[in-house]
Length: 373
Image (cartoon, rainbow, N blue to C red; front, side):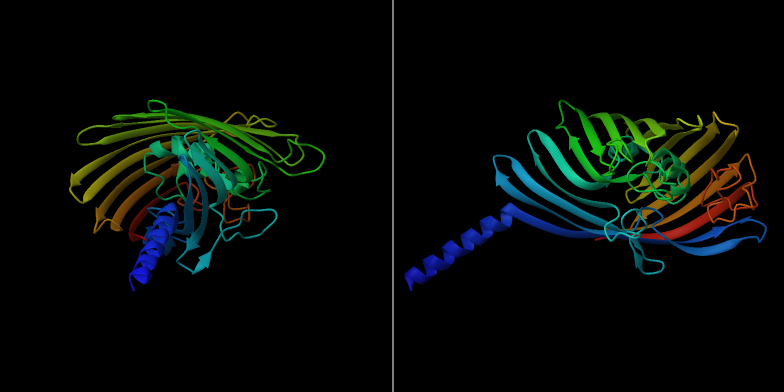
């Protein structure tokens, strides 16, 4: 009997050790809001249910294995949820028209040296400059920093990098990413994505570098990226900086991001500033302003967005919110383009998702709920 008890105790101890060494987490965000948009083109106002407003709805798996000596193996699989319709995954280009894990699919090693991950991953700027986004990367489908700063507007940036024409450049497939450990608050990242095309190593490739500092109340980051088209005949470069300062009663954040197309000299720049103000233990107000400009080619355009957001935490995992957005553009979005993006005849919709074709301004009111699991 004693031997049996001892054997069971030893087995339990081994199982406990194995459990401590390996972990797998299922997680996600389900977010939806009701939006009322005024002056939505010639047809008037519009009411919609939109997924992923405060944060993009997503689901995923992540795990680590402790290899000893401070070394860990890890993986991450994350996909978009379109919970307003029940769909999952978005178009990521060649080779698949849709991807189950469009947001991330990576495996790597982490230790005292930093981390190395391989697969489909965010651009370096998302994890550095993106942390200072005035809205905290909220309203990703309409945010100038996400659409233009992070190059998520496929009709404008899809010809560059690994994803193929018409698709977002915000994430890159076939990539290798290194992120350093923190040295007194300082760190850096390096990333390269292979175009995997015969006849030229630079075809459809991405290369990027970032640097950041996070110490006490101050956070500062910068990122640089360059992407080639599939024939290696054109180049897209992006530069971004961001900073945030935490005070006793507010957090001030600001970013400036600029990207340029070599063949046309087209430049799109986004400047944003915002402030988070806790007004109660469970409630935070956010005010943010973005100015987006296009210049360098034969088209000069600009757009402004103004945001006011209120968040109320019902718990650590559930939040309700209300938001107001005002958007103006210098050009009436082209009606003859024949695309939902309003992209055609040389005019780019710099207020994509808010100002509709046939308009040059709009207001949007949103109320919603977000749950994290």
